[in-house]
Image (tube, rainbow, N blue to C red; front, side, top):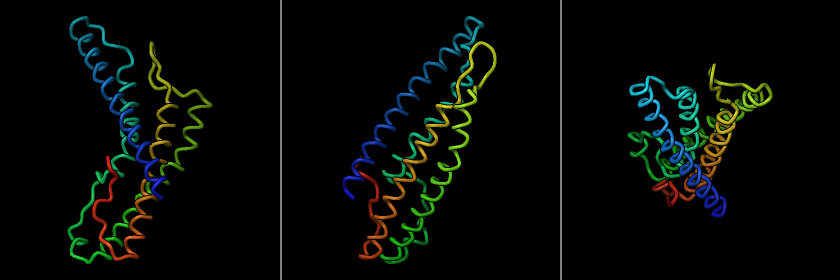
Length: 174
């Protein structure tokens, strides 16, 4: 279990760094587009398409890290009033819901990604057409990692429920 958790932590951290680098590079693209539009009356072609696809990629690359670090939104107004076993049981239920949610998105994305790959689907018209398949496959990767992260949390909370231990810090040592 610890090996899987450490491996998951390394993968989620690497995907987070990749997302941060992509966001950093997008800043330069947007600035170049604005400067080109205002100063030279010639925007960078394809900026809208690249940014719209990259935002999806950035969000899904960060999902696993957000889950492992405890950064996902949760409301514990009622759960915190219960005992340790109750808190762990509800945390396990929430992890199961997250697992099902992200697994369903991952499963449902396979057909769209395969279609984007085989049909050479592009976003945009004219001078720059951006391929859609990388974003579709990153969606599968990101949701798969997120589902796996929730699976690890589910197992952790099920053990906590059996032992009567409150969930505490469920995040990784990021």
